[in-house]
Length: 108
Image 1 (cartoon, one colour):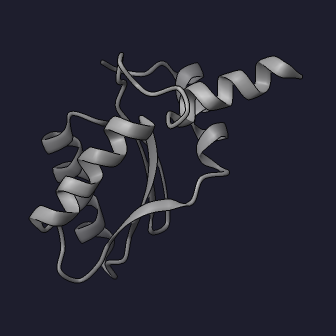
Image 2 (image 1 turned 45 degrees about the vertical axis):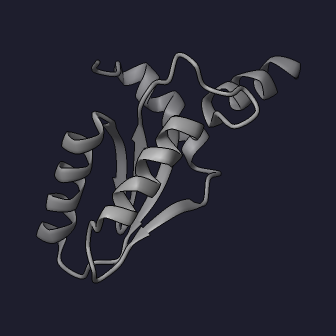
């Protein structure tokens, strides 16, 4: 499920206003952290994760592991922030950042 450039641009626009829902600190991707990422992706579809690791290579390894284990797609990385997307056909419209953003823009 590869996002088009236009879809990624729209996701980046939505993600710009999001706060990180998960922080991956020095303990790395523990079971609890991965469970929280899974829950957040299921609820919100589009999430921002803070990767509090010093090394760029380490952050890239974390991103690769998260995308592989969650079947999510990386939308954007800026510094220590990464934006991930995974569609959920049964997403709760009140929780999904994507649905809420499209409804918000539709009201203007």
